[in-house]
Image 1: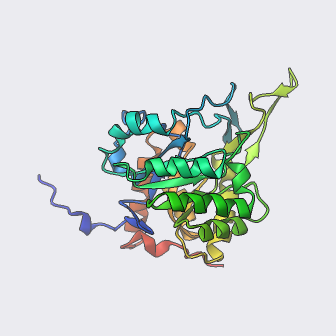
Image 2 (image 1 turned 60 degrees about the vertical axis):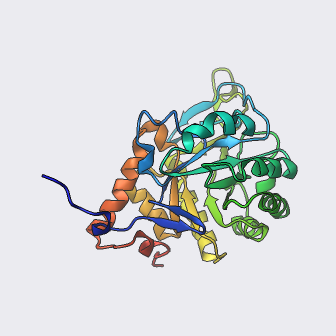
Length: 313
């Protein structure tokens, strides 16, 4: 029997993040799905709203020494150190696959200086297939750059403003939880020119081998991710949403189900990123999309944006 059901007959789960339009609110978080091609044998990447590729720098990086990953209660520590092929090889070797996808491709960028951030953005400006940039000012497991910029409002403004001057692409800034005033950092990013804020990146953590009395991770410190950080991420997103900064928010941290994503949207997120869950279940992102659709059907919601920021307290 032919299925004549039209997309318009179901709930509208598409969202707009400023100039960036997504078919649904679910994106793969940077660093958890490589450059997309690695995940294509597990899921149909066209079923999700977007893919944020792993952090890309001006020059290739080897990353941190092993051990790089350690399982913890309710999550994991990672200390990859932003290993990547560099922007030149990304454009030549990785983008040809990505630009043929029917989903948004967002490139996470970082650098050791404002000049490097600007140069990476400049080289991606106008690159076919790139829909937006996510500015990483919050990675907790590198010695230079990133978190240095994301924990100081003045430096946050400077790096975002430099990237804004270097590209016409929509910008999203990924915020660090390792701060005392996330609203102040968020405001500086908006004043610098970002159109979207994503939060949070990983809180910094560590683990110790009691037999050797040495750090488990080769870099000593790593980023804590997974369900363990969800309450922290929800609280920080809510704080930024209440500040009314005038830009859409993207929630990150411990999302494994559609219900998790709904929680983030209720406290103010217009979209979400799926990270550690991808490493547990490669189909997690697609299942979250279906969970969002089911929630809308069950609750008579015609447009998923109706639930954004509807927390009652």
